[in-house]
Length: 356
Image (cartoon, rainbow, N blue to C red):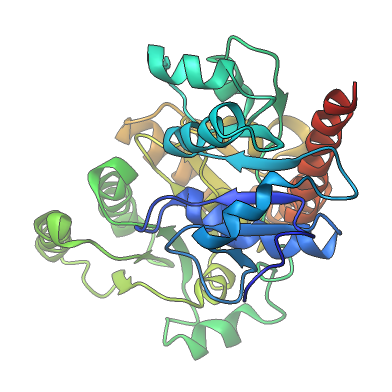
């Protein structure tokens, strides 16, 4: 769907063809932002046709500022997008203001620090990410579509539909199958825990790319050697992953590294408590203490992960209480509508500074 450059107020570039978390974030956010009246269009490859988009030929029309605002906003999420925005604003003298969302949790290179220093507005996706920024910024954690991810009316019926054992409780781990995602930690934890817990099974949902195919084969071989092929199931990748969350009693996010990580939010919105490693924003999106919705443990620790999962698996009352609190926690703090509104506040601040 082509956008009208004259009425576009915000541009979300995506200068990378391969699907990534950044691309997914744009795909989910832009329709919500437009429903909130932000007049946003995407630019670049790798995005679905239903999103309003600008073409390269439309960029020449950006020399004229929109009627409603002193400048358009170019909302970058990668270095190359910051650079393109700088060229258009500072060399081609287009009336643009540049916003950058940072998800990196590491010390920035000199080049990245230079690019960031030239932005008009900075957003950090977590407080951990913000700790690496040396310039003024806002913190806006990601949100999710809480209508898509919701608890089941009948969990047994969901399992029946998905051909899963109805009488078993199920622990799940979803996402790309690779070492970075800690899939091996989940499998090893389940191999350790399931023999003494006959009422539980486990599922791994996601795919392994060609470069990680041998990793997946080794995991399946471990499960076979443990004699648990009928209780640790590799179910592949699914577009209706929301249905698979509804089949779970416990979700495990064992990542060794993560930029942010949406799966614990998706699980909690589905009424599922979470055991997660201390990476990405997991420490900021899982509630602990009296309002517990899950547990965060040391990353890359099989012992800690297995112990935390065992505690939830063996305590029905604790697990049920955490499950009951999980969705209200997401609705109060982590909806995608809330994220879009926070972005709007950043845009307004940038426009106010442009007027000044």
